[in-house]
Length: 179
Image 1: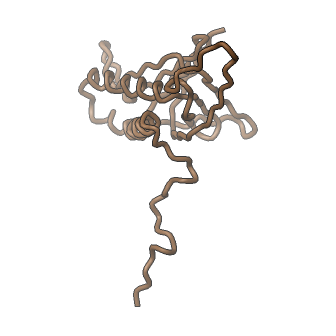
Image 2: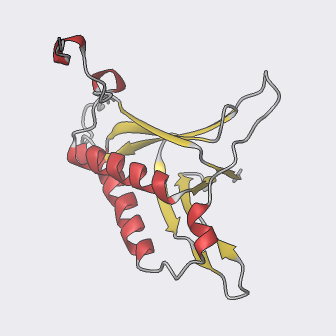
Image 3: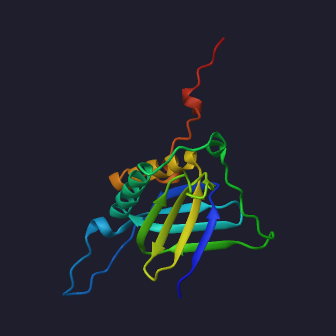
């Protein structure tokens, strides 16, 4: 059964995964570029999350979709530049999560003004799984840059685990005492 879920992303995270695939005797191993190497997560506030496993090739394809979409971006009114997503908040004990285990396609739509004059002030990231179900996420300009950087790291095989990231704060060893 096909479903489409849509929400506004207030955050984005990416992390490496180690997928082990057992290949039955007599069958060919999958192309290493097609094996998921990362998981990406779009966060829609405290209650909603969509995740997708992506391979290096998937990351390159989604980056290519962003590149193609950028060329379609039209002139935007100034108020569109300040668009910020609204978090989805469900009752305290409810969480809603979607997982795309096998990314089958992606579509990116840039901010634009429709023919009727309606302003769409955000990027729309559409991810589709193998059964045709999809998630559509509204993303700000600033968050789109974060997404593209993470996709580049995935495509290049340089995505670091969250605990390996440098937060930018100085460590105790980096601080000099001034007297």
